[in-house]
Length: 356
Image 1 (cartoon, helix red, strand yellow):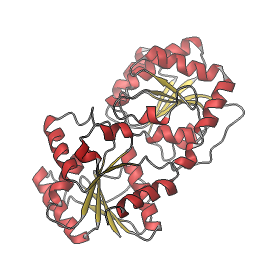
Image 2: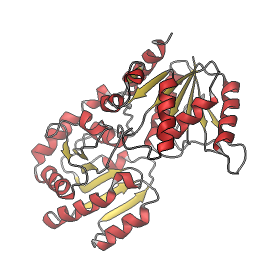
Image 3: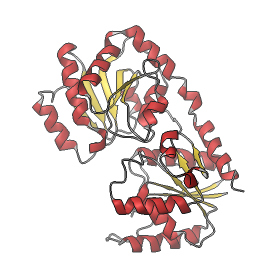
């Protein structure tokens, strides 16, 4: 089977990591895989890929392209690669792929990666997304809640497949955890690091001596640094940027926190659970990812979105009670089997075969 992923780029992001993991698994099963990158010029990937995977940048030179120009170039590439299946990630990429593949033989599958109620913000893009999802051959959602957002016409041809969990270090339960609270994710508005830092400030008043480490990069860095300075936490809040292996930092931490206003299926949260680290997350809205992963008080803690006091209280509850912390991490670790890359890849292949 010839499978082509269509992505924005392969330099950062949870969706891109999923593409990297799935594409390597598909190649290991004997499929021919390429990754087409709409907004990439050099054809490079930040993520490790099997040597057999072909990376194809859509842009041919370093200049701005109109939407129509990108669609035209993408269509040419699709004709040349002639895939059996096209899998697009991200809303604007779904739209580009839909129009580029019109009249061609490839089966187009859209993969929703975020909270469809919250994103995209643009009314035009939302209308185009609706058109694309209705006309796509199939749709893959990460959660039942996200799938339920769409009309019955879309749901009938859809499937729910969560993200695979691929760990970059061995899970461990150290006898003494580092005095570190950790978060992983892009420095963007939707991650609501403002709330997290304010929660950490409240927590630090009651339980001093801990640091907050945030792995990730993004346009909100200066703003987040200013919040830490404002709260006199510059020496305790560490923005360490993009790291090659965040799992080494997550593993052994006292708690993993996710403060997002909305999510799809948060990879970093799944990975922290698989690494036997107690997790605390906001109870994100329509995307439903966190509520479908976490049973509050059993394998993690859920707090209301935007509630810094509840977040601070939850962090303290985990750190002050080692037995409770151990219970959460032990119960969470079972997702290593449920979300293994082998199980998730099998679900994707079964979905492809359902169309034949």
